[in-house]
Image 1 (cartoon, rainbow, N blue to C red):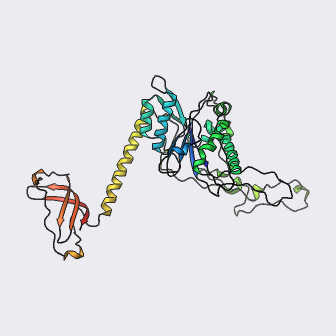
Image 2: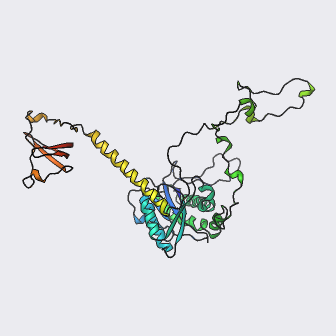
Image 3: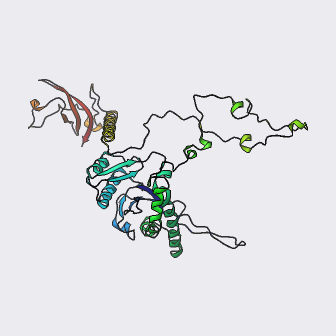
Length: 400
């Protein structure tokens, strides 16, 4: 399973024209397109399941899928990207079509994007016999079958469909409501059994081939090689340059001993800019894992509880910072200018509640009656005795 983006502004094909022609061009919708996400899923037998389209709207409407491939479902997200809720919706769609169960489990492989790794999705998959396996990060262009051999021809055929639509609809622009129709034209040409099976075979996913990648494919790009902080080498021994960054050019002497000179490359004269040392990473690195395994699931649940607790503490702290009319020690009432600075009356209890009904930790709403206004303060009882109760107030609401 993998996502890809389809935009309303396509890349026009190349044009063949006479050499003397002054103006040659193609038409496209605009300078910047609107993104629509497609979720595709295939298997090693060369089959595919109906896709899902995510439109950049707040609410999804059924007419957005007019002309789409058979069985396609839709969803809406203002950004046009997938989300945690949409992934759970798609997972239900996947379970329905694969008929997965605990007696007939199904292996689902995808990348470890944050929208895919949720406790709700893992519970849903585990209860329906779907084993979730994630790819290693930053490897989808080499390992993911859809990225390897399916999505590239899909984009090419989609651009051809967009170009044909523009030629047959002069003066009109492609919108998100045309995406389903255009995808229907390109989808069957790209999602062929040969393309799908090639996507599993080339990275060695199926049939399994541990030697599918050579050693040089695991190396980083030469330009982005980072220096090893544990090793310090002299400039002269590593680059052949002097300490003052001066390049030793070949000698112009006529001495026969210098007739054989090593040719300088442009890289030696002006080396590539190297990336700086990597900063210390504080966040946990993602790795490939089976999300439905109990230890992994328990660890994710623990991390989710910690995030929720941290979020709750942050919310409570923000409420305390926004409270400019009260504190834990004392409460300062801001009187309205029209109240003639009359002191407020004592807080009053509703007739059906007595002081004996209150307990420490109860949240209360206290009303103070002014001359022309009423002020309500929300707070929590921090201590209580027979004569009085100490309340910590958070916020007030003025009623005229």
